[in-house]
Length: 482
Image 1: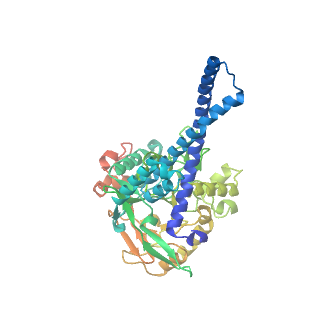
Image 2: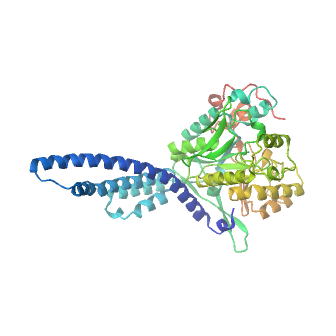
Image 3: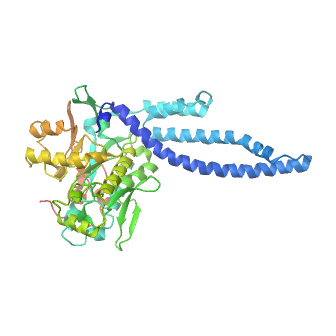
């Protein structure tokens, strides 16, 4: 996290993030409204001119073109005011749908015509009533689910090569993902942020302490955290039916590039980020105050599908896939890759997504030495952190951890804490596993993949029915682990 952000309170950081998110979506609404207003004015002009022409014929009084335009203009402010009022109500409704009742009420009450607008006053009362009905959810009972890159084309992922088994074990198809998302929504699950569970207080000396958060939801709703590992789109996945990168399209929306089997590059919703974005657009009550998920990034191939690791610039210590890529792309521009990745990361942050370290080299932190952890972390902080704007979350690769279930201790924890990490996530099959302490929040995550659905569907029953989700395109049996 950037230093200037650390000086802000959690509520202020969240408020600013929500403001940025709303502004991006409001800009699109305003563009649509301008088009709509233009159509309305054109219609009104034609209708009014026709009426004026009729009056002129009956009375014999001829009006100038300026007078006719003035007659039309008289109607415009009232119409525009109604459009703007409707727009404000729509924004407030969306905030309330995301359980941000205070922001919805403030938005209406700050309008200059609030005191005379009965509809706004009724909405304010409605939002307050909904807020009063909410209950506080224990953060120790928040579940956390995660995915890897989604499989778009099972035929190419499960094609019998050496990578098929791994894909079958740890990945999820787009069809499965969409069914799981819908099932969890129908069960009342709502995405929250780790920062909703606990916030970080920073004293004047720069020391971080944790403060337990409060998640307020209506009865029947339950919070969960969402994350995705390895959002780097590695070289080895090329041609295996997965998206190849995240981009910001011409409309400002976050999409994926995907290479079809025939080699054609298309843009669309081919992985978790755009799929969740579209789902939240249709179901704003799936997101708690604008929260989305956490994207866990390594660095050795770059981030978000952009080849940003320093090895691509120095051409040193390249692996076989990197050498092949650079040979096939002689016009490769490292600075451009970093710039594009930074732009995409900024758009993701503005859209409610968060980032986490997944270690630079996808290392096993439980098995590596302290020296190796330090070397790896410095690479991540040097070549990944500046692109994403920093983070205080680390999601350990391989589901590993730096110690057992006891409270954190030792040199590895002290080092990671000194580098600014306050939130730590491993993998645990329990429904929920949360460890809140005064200097960190630690959380177990549940893998929603082929292995878990095939061998232990009962562990997912609180989320969805695995038998109705499991993609028939998967080869069975799913290979066992180990």
